[in-house]
Length: 332
View (tube, rainbow, N blue to C red):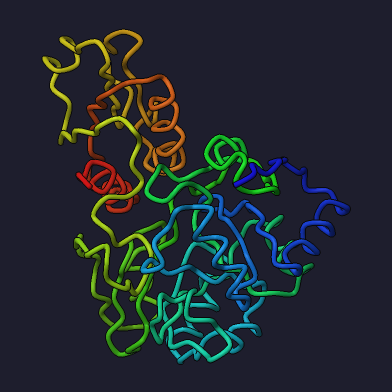
Protein backbone atom coordinates (compact mmCIF):
# COMPACT_ATOMS: atom_id res chain seq x y z
CA UNK A 1 0.00 0.00 0.00
CA UNK A 2 1.42 3.40 -1.02
CA UNK A 3 1.85 5.82 1.88
CA UNK A 4 -0.34 8.90 1.71
CA UNK A 5 0.98 12.44 2.13
CA UNK A 6 -0.33 13.55 5.52
CA UNK A 7 -0.81 17.28 6.01
CA UNK A 8 -2.05 19.42 8.89
CA UNK A 9 -4.46 22.21 7.91
CA UNK A 10 -5.16 25.40 9.83
CA UNK A 11 -8.80 26.29 10.41
CA UNK A 12 -9.12 28.91 7.69
CA UNK A 13 -12.35 29.35 5.75
CA UNK A 14 -10.65 28.09 2.60
CA UNK A 15 -9.32 24.98 4.34
CA UNK A 16 -12.70 24.23 5.92
CA UNK A 17 -14.34 24.40 2.49
CA UNK A 18 -11.68 22.05 1.10
CA UNK A 19 -12.04 19.52 3.94
CA UNK A 20 -15.84 19.65 3.80
CA UNK A 21 -15.65 18.80 0.10
CA UNK A 22 -13.24 15.93 0.82
CA UNK A 23 -15.66 14.47 3.36
CA UNK A 24 -18.50 14.73 0.85
CA UNK A 25 -16.29 12.80 -1.60
CA UNK A 26 -15.79 9.93 0.87
CA UNK A 27 -12.35 10.96 2.18
CA UNK A 28 -11.21 10.78 5.82
CA UNK A 29 -10.38 13.90 7.83
CA UNK A 30 -8.91 13.95 11.34
CA UNK A 31 -10.83 16.53 13.33
CA UNK A 32 -10.50 18.35 16.65
CA UNK A 33 -13.16 17.86 19.30
CA UNK A 34 -13.30 19.08 22.88
CA UNK A 35 -12.69 15.48 24.03
CA UNK A 36 -9.98 13.98 21.76
CA UNK A 37 -9.17 14.20 18.04
CA UNK A 38 -11.40 12.02 15.86
CA UNK A 39 -11.02 10.40 12.46
CA UNK A 40 -14.13 11.47 10.57
CA UNK A 41 -15.99 10.02 7.60
CA UNK A 42 -19.48 10.41 6.15
CA UNK A 43 -21.56 8.31 8.55
CA UNK A 44 -24.03 7.42 5.79
CA UNK A 45 -21.31 6.11 3.44
CA UNK A 46 -20.37 2.52 4.31
CA UNK A 47 -17.30 2.59 2.05
CA UNK A 48 -15.94 5.74 3.68
CA UNK A 49 -16.54 4.31 7.16
CA UNK A 50 -14.75 1.11 6.17
CA UNK A 51 -11.69 3.29 5.45
CA UNK A 52 -11.79 4.49 9.06
CA UNK A 53 -11.55 0.93 10.37
CA UNK A 54 -8.73 0.16 7.93
CA UNK A 55 -6.69 3.28 8.76
CA UNK A 56 -6.94 2.60 12.49
CA UNK A 57 -6.67 -1.18 12.39
CA UNK A 58 -9.93 -1.16 14.34
CA UNK A 59 -12.08 -4.31 14.59
CA UNK A 60 -15.52 -3.87 13.08
CA UNK A 61 -17.02 -5.18 16.33
CA UNK A 62 -16.21 -1.78 17.90
CA UNK A 63 -18.84 0.76 16.77
CA UNK A 64 -18.35 4.41 15.84
CA UNK A 65 -19.90 7.55 17.30
CA UNK A 66 -21.92 9.69 14.88
CA UNK A 67 -21.36 13.43 15.28
CA UNK A 68 -24.01 15.98 14.30
CA UNK A 69 -24.08 19.75 13.96
CA UNK A 70 -27.63 20.37 15.11
CA UNK A 71 -30.38 18.68 17.12
CA UNK A 72 -32.65 18.75 14.07
CA UNK A 73 -30.34 16.16 12.43
CA UNK A 74 -30.82 13.52 15.12
CA UNK A 75 -33.85 11.89 13.48
CA UNK A 76 -31.77 11.25 10.35
CA UNK A 77 -29.62 8.73 12.22
CA UNK A 78 -31.48 7.86 15.44
CA UNK A 79 -34.91 7.58 17.05
CA UNK A 80 -34.79 9.93 20.04
CA UNK A 81 -37.02 9.57 23.07
CA UNK A 82 -38.09 12.17 25.63
CA UNK A 83 -35.09 11.42 27.85
CA UNK A 84 -32.69 11.99 24.96
CA UNK A 85 -34.31 15.31 24.09
CA UNK A 86 -34.02 16.52 27.69
CA UNK A 87 -30.35 15.59 27.88
CA UNK A 88 -29.64 17.09 24.47
CA UNK A 89 -31.12 20.43 25.48
CA UNK A 90 -29.00 20.44 28.65
CA UNK A 91 -25.65 19.00 27.54
CA UNK A 92 -25.37 19.43 23.77
CA UNK A 93 -23.15 20.70 22.29
CA UNK A 94 -20.86 18.88 24.69
CA UNK A 95 -19.07 15.70 25.77
CA UNK A 96 -22.11 13.43 26.09
CA UNK A 97 -22.88 10.51 23.74
CA UNK A 98 -26.27 8.80 23.75
CA UNK A 99 -27.07 5.25 22.65
CA UNK A 100 -30.41 5.23 20.81
CA UNK A 101 -32.26 3.02 18.32
CA UNK A 102 -30.86 3.71 14.86
CA UNK A 103 -32.55 4.53 11.57
CA UNK A 104 -32.14 2.55 8.35
CA UNK A 105 -29.96 5.29 6.87
CA UNK A 106 -27.05 4.35 9.12
CA UNK A 107 -25.03 1.50 7.57
CA UNK A 108 -24.39 -1.57 9.74
CA UNK A 109 -20.61 -1.02 9.74
CA UNK A 110 -21.08 2.14 11.84
CA UNK A 111 -22.99 0.30 14.58
CA UNK A 112 -21.18 -3.06 14.42
CA UNK A 113 -24.40 -4.58 13.09
CA UNK A 114 -26.47 -3.54 16.09
CA UNK A 115 -29.86 -1.86 15.99
CA UNK A 116 -28.63 1.06 18.10
CA UNK A 117 -26.32 3.98 17.30
CA UNK A 118 -24.09 6.27 19.38
CA UNK A 119 -24.71 9.98 18.69
CA UNK A 120 -23.52 13.32 20.01
CA UNK A 121 -23.22 17.00 19.09
CA UNK A 122 -19.66 18.17 19.78
CA UNK A 123 -18.78 21.57 21.24
CA UNK A 124 -15.49 22.31 19.47
CA UNK A 125 -16.19 25.44 17.36
CA UNK A 126 -13.94 24.45 14.45
CA UNK A 127 -15.41 20.96 14.18
CA UNK A 128 -18.89 22.46 14.35
CA UNK A 129 -18.06 24.74 11.42
CA UNK A 130 -16.85 21.71 9.46
CA UNK A 131 -19.99 19.74 10.32
CA UNK A 132 -22.15 22.62 9.16
CA UNK A 133 -20.10 23.09 5.99
CA UNK A 134 -20.20 19.48 4.85
CA UNK A 135 -23.87 19.06 5.93
CA UNK A 136 -23.28 15.42 6.85
CA UNK A 137 -23.39 13.33 9.99
CA UNK A 138 -19.78 12.27 10.61
CA UNK A 139 -18.73 8.98 12.18
CA UNK A 140 -15.51 9.57 14.12
CA UNK A 141 -13.61 7.37 16.55
CA UNK A 142 -10.33 8.60 18.04
CA UNK A 143 -7.72 9.41 15.37
CA UNK A 144 -5.03 6.90 16.38
CA UNK A 145 -4.11 3.26 15.81
CA UNK A 146 -6.67 1.09 17.55
CA UNK A 147 -5.90 0.50 21.21
CA UNK A 148 -3.15 3.12 21.46
CA UNK A 149 -3.22 6.30 23.55
CA UNK A 150 -5.84 8.74 22.24
CA UNK A 151 -4.66 11.93 20.50
CA UNK A 152 -5.34 15.35 21.98
CA UNK A 153 -3.39 17.46 19.43
CA UNK A 154 -3.03 17.49 15.65
CA UNK A 155 0.62 16.50 16.05
CA UNK A 156 -0.41 13.39 18.02
CA UNK A 157 -2.56 12.39 15.05
CA UNK A 158 0.25 12.87 12.57
CA UNK A 159 2.68 10.97 14.81
CA UNK A 160 0.31 7.99 14.87
CA UNK A 161 -1.33 7.99 11.43
CA UNK A 162 1.29 9.59 9.20
CA UNK A 163 1.06 7.99 5.76
CA UNK A 164 -2.35 6.42 6.46
CA UNK A 165 -4.56 9.50 6.12
CA UNK A 166 -4.25 12.71 4.10
CA UNK A 167 -6.02 15.42 6.05
CA UNK A 168 -5.75 16.69 9.64
CA UNK A 169 -7.62 19.79 10.84
CA UNK A 170 -5.71 21.56 13.61
CA UNK A 171 -7.99 22.92 16.32
CA UNK A 172 -5.41 23.18 19.10
CA UNK A 173 -5.18 20.98 22.21
CA UNK A 174 -8.38 19.25 23.32
CA UNK A 175 -9.95 21.07 26.29
CA UNK A 176 -11.48 18.04 28.03
CA UNK A 177 -8.84 15.51 27.02
CA UNK A 178 -10.90 12.36 27.66
CA UNK A 179 -13.55 10.72 25.51
CA UNK A 180 -17.22 11.62 26.04
CA UNK A 181 -19.50 10.13 28.65
CA UNK A 182 -21.70 7.46 27.05
CA UNK A 183 -25.24 6.94 28.38
CA UNK A 184 -27.44 4.08 27.18
CA UNK A 185 -30.96 5.36 26.51
CA UNK A 186 -32.35 2.44 24.54
CA UNK A 187 -34.67 1.95 27.52
CA UNK A 188 -35.28 5.53 28.68
CA UNK A 189 -36.77 4.32 31.96
CA UNK A 190 -33.43 2.68 32.86
CA UNK A 191 -30.58 4.95 31.70
CA UNK A 192 -27.08 3.69 32.44
CA UNK A 193 -23.53 4.88 31.99
CA UNK A 194 -21.43 2.77 29.61
CA UNK A 195 -18.33 4.97 29.64
CA UNK A 196 -17.47 7.65 32.21
CA UNK A 197 -16.44 11.11 31.11
CA UNK A 198 -16.76 14.75 32.05
CA UNK A 199 -20.55 14.51 32.57
CA UNK A 200 -21.50 12.36 35.56
CA UNK A 201 -24.40 9.99 36.24
CA UNK A 202 -25.53 12.39 38.98
CA UNK A 203 -25.76 15.28 36.52
CA UNK A 204 -27.74 13.15 34.07
CA UNK A 205 -30.02 11.93 36.86
CA UNK A 206 -30.83 15.48 37.93
CA UNK A 207 -31.98 16.35 34.41
CA UNK A 208 -34.03 13.17 33.95
CA UNK A 209 -35.29 13.17 37.55
CA UNK A 210 -34.60 9.48 37.89
CA UNK A 211 -31.88 7.13 39.04
CA UNK A 212 -29.13 6.53 36.51
CA UNK A 213 -27.21 3.29 36.72
CA UNK A 214 -23.64 4.28 37.39
CA UNK A 215 -20.62 3.11 35.49
CA UNK A 216 -19.37 -0.42 36.11
CA UNK A 217 -15.88 -1.34 34.94
CA UNK A 218 -16.62 -4.39 32.81
CA UNK A 219 -14.48 -6.36 30.41
CA UNK A 220 -16.06 -7.03 27.04
CA UNK A 221 -14.99 -9.75 24.60
CA UNK A 222 -13.11 -8.35 21.60
CA UNK A 223 -14.75 -10.71 19.11
CA UNK A 224 -18.30 -9.66 20.06
CA UNK A 225 -20.21 -6.72 18.69
CA UNK A 226 -20.15 -3.89 21.25
CA UNK A 227 -23.00 -1.51 22.08
CA UNK A 228 -20.57 1.39 22.51
CA UNK A 229 -16.87 2.14 22.02
CA UNK A 230 -14.41 2.02 24.93
CA UNK A 231 -15.64 -1.27 26.37
CA UNK A 232 -12.71 -3.57 25.61
CA UNK A 233 -10.34 -4.69 28.40
CA UNK A 234 -7.19 -3.20 26.85
CA UNK A 235 -7.42 0.27 25.38
CA UNK A 236 -5.69 3.67 25.53
CA UNK A 237 -2.42 1.74 25.96
CA UNK A 238 1.13 3.04 25.45
CA UNK A 239 3.81 0.69 24.18
CA UNK A 240 5.33 0.67 27.67
CA UNK A 241 3.76 -1.58 30.29
CA UNK A 242 1.65 0.30 32.83
CA UNK A 243 1.63 -0.68 36.51
CA UNK A 244 -1.01 0.97 38.68
CA UNK A 245 -0.65 2.11 42.30
CA UNK A 246 -3.21 3.65 44.62
CA UNK A 247 -0.35 5.91 45.64
CA UNK A 248 3.26 5.57 44.57
CA UNK A 249 5.43 4.70 47.58
CA UNK A 250 8.62 6.74 48.06
CA UNK A 251 10.50 3.44 48.03
CA UNK A 252 9.37 2.77 44.43
CA UNK A 253 10.12 6.28 43.22
CA UNK A 254 13.50 6.44 44.93
CA UNK A 255 14.71 3.10 43.58
CA UNK A 256 13.44 3.44 40.02
CA UNK A 257 15.31 1.20 37.60
CA UNK A 258 16.65 2.12 34.15
CA UNK A 259 13.86 2.03 31.56
CA UNK A 260 11.17 2.88 34.13
CA UNK A 261 9.23 6.09 34.77
CA UNK A 262 6.84 7.30 37.43
CA UNK A 263 3.61 9.21 36.68
CA UNK A 264 2.03 10.92 39.69
CA UNK A 265 -1.43 12.44 39.86
CA UNK A 266 -0.13 15.50 41.73
CA UNK A 267 3.40 16.87 41.71
CA UNK A 268 5.10 15.33 44.76
CA UNK A 269 6.92 17.34 47.37
CA UNK A 270 10.05 15.48 46.32
CA UNK A 271 10.32 14.36 42.71
CA UNK A 272 12.99 11.74 42.16
CA UNK A 273 14.97 12.81 39.10
CA UNK A 274 14.12 13.19 35.43
CA UNK A 275 12.09 9.96 35.31
CA UNK A 276 9.27 11.51 37.40
CA UNK A 277 6.19 13.06 35.74
CA UNK A 278 2.81 14.29 37.00
CA UNK A 279 -0.64 15.09 35.60
CA UNK A 280 -1.25 18.26 37.61
CA UNK A 281 1.07 20.44 39.66
CA UNK A 282 -1.72 21.25 42.12
CA UNK A 283 -3.87 18.10 42.01
CA UNK A 284 -6.59 19.63 39.84
CA UNK A 285 -8.54 16.76 38.26
CA UNK A 286 -9.73 18.77 35.25
CA UNK A 287 -6.11 19.57 34.45
CA UNK A 288 -5.14 15.94 35.07
CA UNK A 289 -7.77 14.69 32.61
CA UNK A 290 -6.67 17.20 29.98
CA UNK A 291 -3.02 16.16 30.28
CA UNK A 292 -3.37 12.38 30.75
CA UNK A 293 -3.04 11.19 27.16
CA UNK A 294 -0.42 13.78 26.23
CA UNK A 295 1.69 12.78 29.22
CA UNK A 296 1.41 9.05 28.44
CA UNK A 297 2.48 9.75 24.87
CA UNK A 298 5.39 11.90 26.02
CA UNK A 299 6.67 9.19 28.35
CA UNK A 300 6.15 6.49 25.73
CA UNK A 301 8.12 8.41 23.11
CA UNK A 302 11.08 8.53 25.48
CA UNK A 303 11.39 4.78 25.28
CA UNK A 304 10.49 3.64 28.78
CA UNK A 305 9.56 -0.02 29.17
CA UNK A 306 7.50 0.37 32.36
CA UNK A 307 5.46 3.26 33.75
CA UNK A 308 4.42 3.27 37.42
CA UNK A 309 1.16 5.25 37.44
CA UNK A 310 -0.75 6.65 40.39
CA UNK A 311 -4.55 6.36 40.34
CA UNK A 312 -6.55 9.52 40.94
CA UNK A 313 -8.32 9.94 44.31
CA UNK A 314 -12.11 10.27 44.41
CA UNK A 315 -13.25 13.48 42.77
CA UNK A 316 -14.78 15.21 39.77
CA UNK A 317 -12.91 13.31 37.04
CA UNK A 318 -11.48 10.36 38.96
CA UNK A 319 -13.86 7.73 37.58
CA UNK A 320 -13.11 8.68 33.97
CA UNK A 321 -9.35 9.02 34.43
CA UNK A 322 -9.03 5.78 36.37
CA UNK A 323 -11.10 3.90 33.80
CA UNK A 324 -8.64 4.93 31.09
CA UNK A 325 -5.69 3.98 33.30
CA UNK A 326 -7.10 0.53 34.13
CA UNK A 327 -7.62 -0.23 30.46
CA UNK A 328 -4.17 1.12 29.61
CA UNK A 329 -2.71 -1.28 32.20
CA UNK A 330 -4.70 -4.31 31.07
CA UNK A 331 -2.92 -7.11 29.27
CA UNK A 332 -4.11 -7.91 25.77
